[in-house]
Image 1 (tube, rainbow, N blue to C red):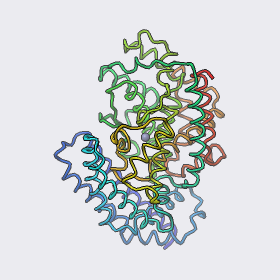
Image 2: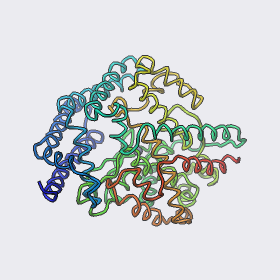
Image 3: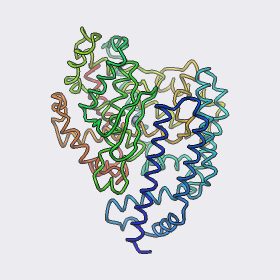
Image 4: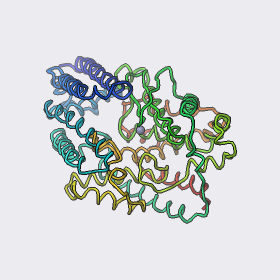
Length: 500
Ligand SMILES: [Zn+2]
């Protein structure tokens, strides 16, 4: 086979796989937005069937020939960045799936369906014993799949690599230690501070529709192009990518703080996903780098932009106009309230400072479970002890402890690290952004989001899946992964809020 022929065939194949991705997104959107509960059982079979069809594409003779050709090719010799990325992504996916029998994948998908149902029941009854056997099986399945997909690595390392390409357990452990140390020191100063922040006004009840209107107003002004998406309402917001120009988000406006910041978060995912350049979109490399890098973009908008003073200098007058709850609240009080630091049990409700510790706890426990140093009987104790040791809080039951997230029930092991990794990337990106545009926050305070969005598009978003996360960071900062910037940023911001 000639290179030119192989690359053309690969483009076609990638197009087909990309259509599968879009179809999966449509199924998922439908499942959450309009499917009746009674449709679940049959839908699981449809999802299993789709997984088989996708496996057929990657197991086809055509795919095998292309893979054979490129696996013996030195990828570094491919100078065209788009073609390089196409080959790299394909070879990685191929290696990962070729040794995993389709039937095993189908069983895994079905097992995950059953495990999620048991997880819901176990959470409602606050009874881990209902969920435990399913959790154990899902872990075992995912371990089996990881061993088959990358026999050279330990199962957990293979899962991390599949989620966050170019990032190893060693790198994560090294940077996470810095994050833990930095946050624990910062928390100590915050706890000793005499500043008391009242955030009770955020807990008042807000009209859901009015809040929904406001949330759409701020995220569209921030940069979310509703012509390239739409909105759905769900309990746990997520972003769904249907194509290079169709990225929809879901919202939940039952409470003010969660409603507003989850929306900015999802809008961050969406903006990143649809800002690929024409070349990237044409090659079906749209959607952005998954895992930690995607989280870096959503969390960047949510926290480093959305929880900044300048952001609310622009939006708070509008919030005050719309909500009588803020009638007697100054912007300073509002800004402090949305940034109040409080050690808590729930990851998704955690503030910007303590948040990063929650995924680290899960990452460490996953590592121990896969290495066998703890088991599923001792997991609740290990979970609770870590919460007590890092955050000073202890869950009273497993529903507010280890069963609070859907990830494990859904078979997403080796994913949690990506949230904290996203924060680390965010600190480095902020540093580079401020170096390039020192007055970027001042512009935001005037409602001018163009400098921010243009810089992110030009330096990060337009490349989508063209590079790995660490490569993008290297391109814009010249550095490797480095948590120091994130810790520095937290210190700078919170020393002003808590006066130390
Ligand atoms: Zn996210």
